Amino acid sequence: MANHILVLDDERNYLLVLQAILEEEGYQVTTLADPTLALPFLEESEVDAIITDMKMPGMSGQEILEGVRRQFPHIPVLIMTAFGSIDRAVEAMKAGAFDYITKPFANDEILRSVRRAMHLAQAQRQNRILREHLAQRFGAGAIVGQSAAIRDVLTLAAKVAPTRSTVLITGESGTGKELVARAIHLGSERRDMPFVSVNCASLNPGVLESELFGHEKGSFTGAVAMRRGRFELAQGGTLFLDEVGEISPEIQVKLLRVLQERVVERVGGTESIPVDFRLITATNKDLVAEVAAGRFREDLFYRLNVINIHVPPLRERREDIPLLAIHFLRRSTEEAGRTDLRGFTPQAMDYLSAYEWPGNVRQLENVVERCAVLAAGPDIDVHDLPPELRDEESQYKSAVDLLPLQLNLSETLEKIEAALIRRALVRSDFVQVKAAELLGVSKSLLQYKLKKYGITPRG
Image (tube, rainbow, N blue to C red; front, side):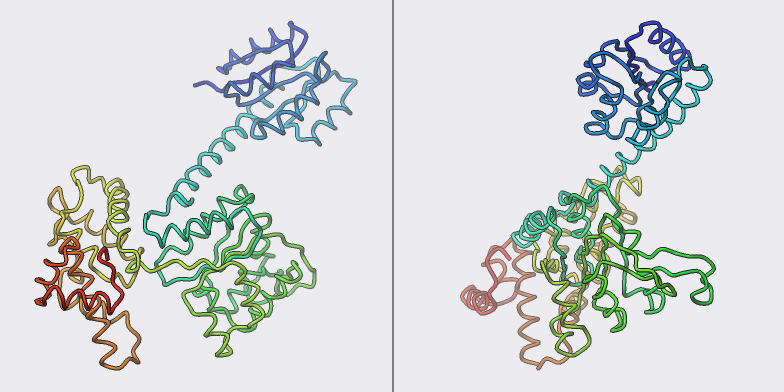
């Protein structure tokens, strides 16, 4: 479809001339002699750019500009004005007009201005599409699951998103903490501003300081130019510090100062630069224990832990495993071009549901991607799963690996027993008689164990 331009002018001769010029260039043109019809027209039609005269009866070009900026800020507005009214055109530019054109105008002049406006309109359209894609992929609707545990996470994220509160997201590696952070950002008033993410564990303290605060030219070897830090890059938006429990004591002090004073100083600089950002942090560490051990500042912890959202491990929301597996399979089949794949066999899904998933959602996603690439038949079966999911000894080992090293034998055996019972329940479709048969115990003993370990009949 051709780019659509709305032209407003109370002088019909100008409307006819502009329509002829623009249509000859391939643009779709709508002309209105009554400017009061412009905003209602925009509510019903897709328009890429507007050309409006400045002085018109009923509604001025300035009023048109103000209305468009308020209701349709993505549409560039070009102002036409008589030669003697350039001052008013300059004021319109300050108010947000894309360009101004003096009457009488040359055809080449107006076409150049329109082409520039169309380039802007195209960039803004692509930006909107990208934001919608990000919202679809990373918004709250992209967090897959129906378990009570994940519903609690989504409910809390939705409540905190519109606020300015600092959020600390806790949970094991691979549970989707950054996905929750992005959902909070996309649900906030800062959604159209940057979401800047930093993995604090992946950078040594010196590099991390430069990344966060920026640096001045010549402040250290290799600093050949001034560089803005992530605090500045997140201006007006959200800064996400992943693995915040890994930052050094020196950077903890500097981070605390930024949160208290809302200013930063670049490495090697002396200027205090005001910053405005919403802070979301995440960690897989127990920060309370880190504070008690003296490795994390207590005052910083309280600054970060205004709102805490805990993302549960996958093994604690097993009913979400089939939903996640199907979700990842759809994505993987599209990327791998596997139109022949239909899904998982019931037996394969049982194995997925029974596994302990030490790597959580990230590990499940990787396993499904592997299966989508390597599976021979239309359905992913048990033999298509990686060895750690199929091998009984490996399944036992995965349960043991999740436990702390310093546990006595009795406690360790109880943990393994509970894991085996959960797996038997899943494989028997939660029919207790069948689960008891798989385990080689009586139904009454199984029921005693369920009560002992606090295992519900539905896993």
